Amino acid sequence: MNKRHQFSILAAIAATAAIAAAPAFADSSHRAKAMTMMKADFTTKGQATADRIYEDGLQAVCNRSGNHPPEKIAKQLEGDQMATVKYPADGKLMGDWKAGEKLAQSGRGFTWNDAPGSPAGGNCYNCHQIAPSESSFGTVGPSLFNFGKLRGNTAENQKYVYSKIYNAKSYNLCSEMPRFGHVGALGEKQIKDLVALLLDPESPVNK
Amino acid sequence: MRQTLIAATAIALAFAMQPVVAQDKPAAKPAAKMAAKKMAKPAVVEEKDAATLEFEKFRAKMIEDGNPAELFEAQGEELWKTKRGPNNVSLAETCDLGLGLGVVKGTYVQMPRYFADAGKVMDAERRIVWCMVEKQGFKAADLAKKPFAAETYTPEQTSLVTYVAGLSRDMKFAVPLKDPHVKEVYEIGKEVANHRAGPYDFSCNTCHGVDGKRIRMQQLPNISSKAGATTAVLGWPGYRMTGNRMLTLQWRMGDCFRQQRFPQPGYASDTVTSLLTFMTANANGSTYTGPGIKR
Image (tube, rainbow over all chains, first blue to last red; front, side):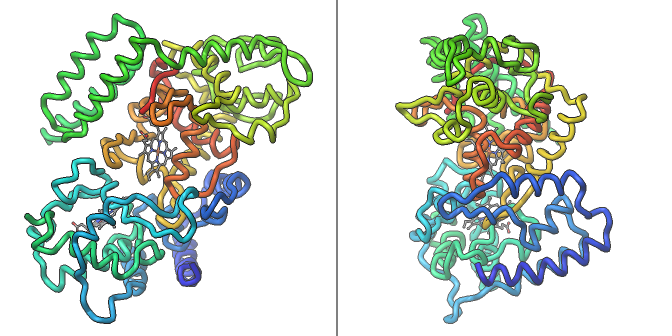
């Protein structure tokens, strides 16, 4: 949370400057009213604290630009997001695909009825097709079936997938995909396991 | 291009199909089955439809055996007509749902609307709670304590909403958007639906912003389109087979905020009304099929 806040403040300053310079992004009166209303209406329940309705800098930019900020701002903020990605000290980016599959299945985490501090799942199947054995998959994101087979299990691609899961916004500022590593939902080992699920030639994803 | 067209047709069919199946008129059933067959064939919208169709069939069967919502409609009717509360008055003699004191028929499809006596735009459940508090003398805090059904418990306001909704069956949604108060709340609701925040950066539109998406096998209606908004508000209040309980749209909004990783919205709050105004007005012109059954 601390790290996230620090980042948010920096980004918010940058974003506010950018927004002020572009009048089209100023808060509409309806938006301002919506914020005031939400401040009054939401209360903390379980781990879902009332302050979650406030935007961080990136969210603020996406909210005010209909998720399509000007190219220049997007590139700059994607760079800021990329800078938050922490890679494993041992340089190994691939873990155990079996553990990754379990994690991908779980939709747990961060809701008001998840026990505070309990480990979060990956939520991946909520949005993606992944292994062919799982037919109950969502379509908010693209299919990742055969991801490694199609894109290759190169060092470069491992790095891409690791950082995409760590912080999806470092490639696509207003992506609908959460920033799993950045917000502390998934740790280093878990992200490695998910990289393996997508890229390991032994993973059913690539059979 | 052709692919999108086919997909669009299939999706349109899926939307068109739902009201037919949710209806409890026996005459409508063969049509529903035909639509179901047509949909299953092209398999364009992927396998999603196997499960959805299975559920639709099950729902049609259940309704054949008696729509469970009707039980709550009957309970609600009794609650509406009985003198109750510290003031010992009935809602039938004191509560104005927008079309005059005691009038129920046709009111559900015209809410949310502006109520001058309260100075607020209110959705059906909120209005009923307001009447229970202001007219019958119940305490707002008591009504907000356990506002949603559990397996062995159904709040009075849930039965009341179901009764009121039942008397708008087969009528068209007609949220009075021409009223500037309503329009204002509609615009605010649109902003709430857009608002990304929280640990996962989700807004309503993350899941309900475009056509034809799903989370796992669950279809996600696009609440900004007429067809999607219609799907979103049809069948509510609904008897939910997961947990066997009667639930209202007030509950649905709360549960989606939970999935959004947001904190808890106030029961019968402005925020919830604004979303219901946005969605229901987007469904204006579509026919409401009455309280139904939900997965």
